[in-house]
Image (cartoon, rainbow, N blue to C red):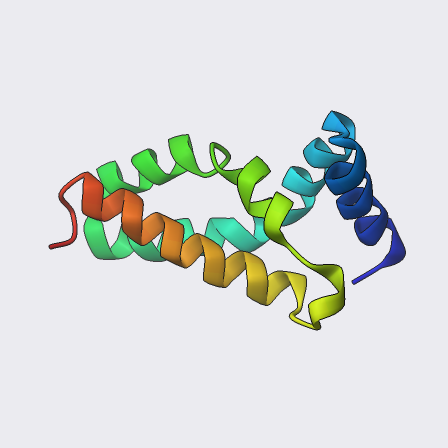
Length: 97
């Protein structure tokens, strides 16, 4: 992960910097979009629309939990966390039993 991304994470977590959070969203959307596509292919277009409308609702909370010093790559963290979150959203909406 490059130093700029680390700086955004630190600024957001320590100062609740809204601009840093927005930059993180822009950076991470390319990690999240393939999951939305995967779930859209599996559960249909409406499920994809639902996930696109919800992906950033928990972004603040999710990034308040990320730890730079744990050694888990940002991409792994984002993909694993969003896979779990999206499954919860789809389960609540009735797509998954």
